Image 1 (spheres, rainbow, N blue to C red):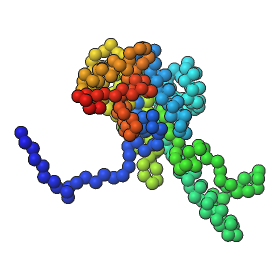
Image 2 (image 1 turned 180 degrees about the vertical axis):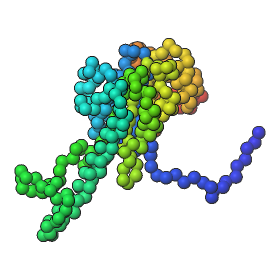
Image 3 (image 1 turned 45 degrees about the vertical axis):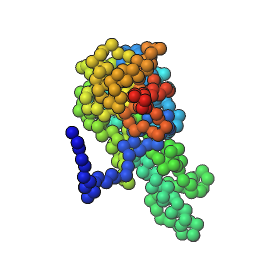
Image 4 (image 1 turned 30 degrees about the horizontal axis):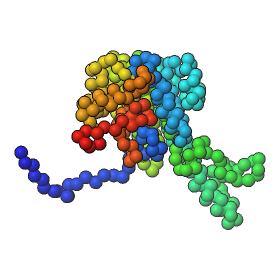
Length: 308
């Protein structure tokens, strides 16, 4: 069979500038906003893995962590490590959890937009004052500091505001798959639209990163297909279920042969029951040599037929 081609330049696709992962993250971490899943049997380390990932983001970014878990009170170490505020902890059996998560996104978007308006108006008002013009402005009293009898720019809610960036929202949904939350169609809708939540006036959106722990990939208490299909990263712990592992391979191992996928999986989990294969299905950065890692700190670089 021979296939020939003929160009039709008038029908070429023009891509609009932008990115599905607009948040600037350190080179060693997966791109955001994302949807992460940790799958494995009870007590194997799923929550520890995702908590560690969130903690690494907190080292470099201004982050607000939300937690949806029915066992949060019994896991004080998790709350302390991620500095989760009491008002940011939700029971998955509560009514309206998804709506509350969306409301928080919109509140944070509004806070960031308001600060930018304040900054623009502060510069304009200070210019007027320097020229001897007393401004009459709705923002004027927001800039007045009674303790110093001076006008000054209010401190931002987060340091990142000064760099023109909003806070990063991370939500961990921990072992909640038998709860009311996962019978709520709004959750699936949130996962599908998570990058577009809380749109910004200039375009784009604040968005939210979601992370799930689950004991089974495909069983009744496993990940619903719409959530699996939107995953940008998955932590695969050791499993005795060949069908589950095959399903993961079919979903996330397409860039390498089936044999290579099983080889990196075996390599990743060897040495400890708490080890896992991390598959980065998001946007890899130039310095990230592979979509596969053993845990988060060791790349597994596949070489097939002499080609990496």
